[in-house]
Length: 84
Image 1 (cartoon, rainbow, N blue to C red):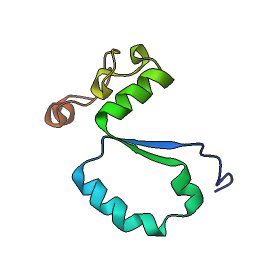
Image 2 (tube, rainbow, N blue to C red; image 1 turned 30 degrees about the vertical axis):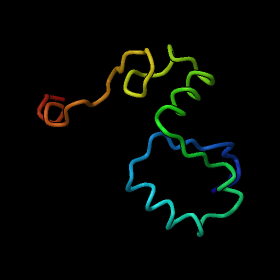
Image 3 (cartoon, rainbow, N blue to C red; image 1 turned 60 degrees about the horizontal axis):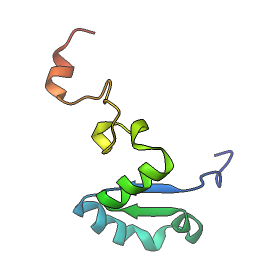
Image 4 (cartoon, one colour; image 1 turned 30 degrees about the horizontal axis):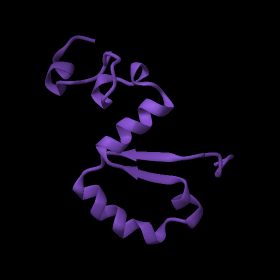
């Protein structure tokens, strides 16, 4: 609310088919300034970009990198059943 134009770029990585359909419907209503900052990437494009920007050693395995995914919820039932 205080810094509405602070976002530099948003990358949407490997969206599903449903996102593609919703994106086509929503795109005409998104301001041009926001569209210029938005990039939709395939899985392969995302991996290349993440490697260039962050290095795969800093990207979690779940996102195609080499860093172990710590604390990621892989099985929701197990997560919900454990004692907190």
